[in-house]
Length: 252
Image 1 (cartoon, helix red, strand yellow):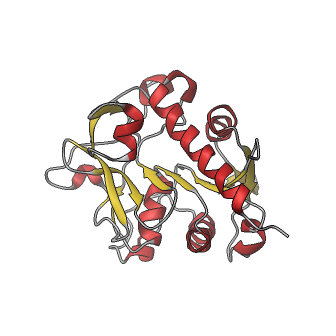
Image 2 (cartoon, one colour; image 1 turned 60 degrees about the vertical axis):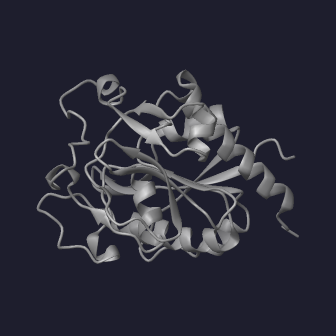
């Protein structure tokens, strides 16, 4: 088996000073290296997006990361965005088009936070723009004034579906996860199966029943991934799926 599969990460398009930059969080890059045993490949997000196929011809997996921006609601038929909501149209265009092409190839996909929301939208699901404003749902946001270690500390339990991937990897019926998101899953896409829920009922993880490895989680397993065996196992399983894909892929 190939020792280090290539995994693509769609970047965020952001302004630094007077210029636009393509950026990716280092914690995701490190998690791929340390826990998945993969080689990260940063993919620039542009609008219109670059063609997906030349990238996917060479990649063994796709990691959709979290971000400070939120998906524009027109992608899932949502109400107009609230004032001050940060968006990244180039990331939307790139990630959603990449996802469609990747799923058609059965390329392994791990989707985290915003990435999980992108996965749900790409498959026809919808989102809550402000989870904390939905009756019956709790506030899943971090304290913006707290130190980053506190923001990413374990925040609330999630119940893992019996017989699912996550319950198997965790060896438990529930785990406590960090919580750093304002948006969340409203209607889960028809092609996704629930893997975990918060106590308020919000879907916190799901996987595709039609693909070899397509998994989305709402929390951040990449945060200090080597310190949490359960999170390390998520990335390890993703890396193993990417290695299997690389062995069977025809790149002639």
